[in-house]
Image 1 (tube, rainbow over the protein chains, first blue to last red):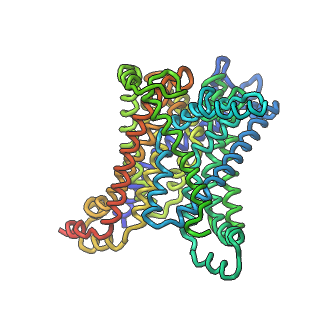
Image 2: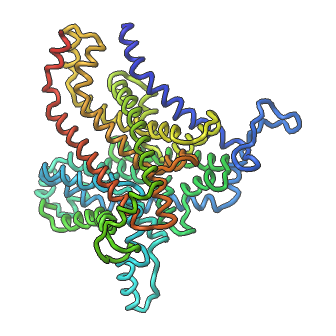
Image 3: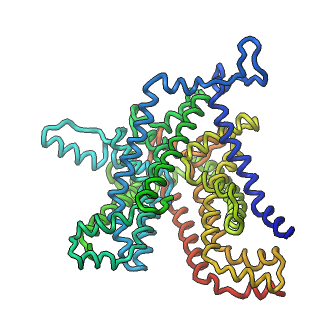
Length: 299
Length: 270
């Protein structure tokens, strides 16, 4: 038994230690930083171990959080991020569902190939996938020319596709689409095809068979796919940074600016904590919805 | 909705076109004899030559390779341990710590490690901080792959080895390790690709020192786009493609041999 406990310690000890030092403590430091005063030249003001005699303060403050609520623009950016995440999730769901159904109902060897074809573009560099849309949506591109010629025929002024909320949404969908296809496919693959035959025998038409049989059964897949898209979109800064215009700022861009632009660390940390809370509540809500809708776990 | 539903097929074809056309355009324009990514002018290898004469880019590629090798080594070691530990023992804390970095937005990991290095370790950011940050999120991916492999295996193999008198270490070295090896290698390749491709976490933990590949690409995209970006993108795609082919080969080979491998048990008994 002693040997067994030693083995357990040897196997789980090193990763546990590494993650406590380089994951848990950085997270705690981030929480602490959000309650500190910003330094005069960026960074942080020194922390006082004992209460300052003149002010009675420890050098800790909730200013960063108060600052967040003092100007509506920050709440607005959070709301906008949620809206973009919601829109991206919805578009991904609409695009992924037919594909996932088709893959799940194909023959086995074809199925593996089709899944691989979904994953493959996802393996190319993340920046490259965003950059590709810079080319496609750019003012000189064939797509822009085509759209603007078509609009011109109706007497509508030309539009710029790049550096717009539209471009941000396209980029977000493109980068996250496989996260939706895979859980949906995994779920749909397990459905018993005889259920659909039974529904048909009982007189259900194609739409009824989908809406009354396939869709409710696929809800766990829908929920886990949605969480896998929604959560990373919420914290994304590269897509709006590259494809968006000056007004298309999301939470991620705001956080990035606090650390690499204005150097207001406490505010940046406070924003990160609020993003964490947002992510946790989304994950919690998804699990709860999935459980109450299906009695199964989605995550 | 039957198997041959034309609506379903056309919807799927559109999604595949949406997934692949952008990447095909990037590759095509890397051979285009024009500074603008606008219309096809003629075939050239000029942008690849320009790339290989760009010393800063080459240095960045070398640095990124070094980081990826180190991070994937550490992540494979720690991730395999985590996968084994989570599969074998009823642990409460370790699974949470291993899988959370995989699930949360990357920016949070980047920010917290940035603050940790600057405040606690009083350490200048650079290669070491990047390697540690990459290791932290790659551990989870390796653990997932290794654990999935262990879950698909017959537990009686390990019991047989012990019944035949193998010590825990012998069981591990002669039975468990050879059996999980395909998953370990697949995990290593996966961490390597994740590390070399990672932009967000690298962006926060890089500091001001050496050039790193994703950051160079980012700067090129933001400041001055030339088809050189397309050329480096094409080469990177090729590298990842090769990695994925090797990884999937290993995984499928491994699972087909799987539990049929009995000879390690015999060896362990000796």
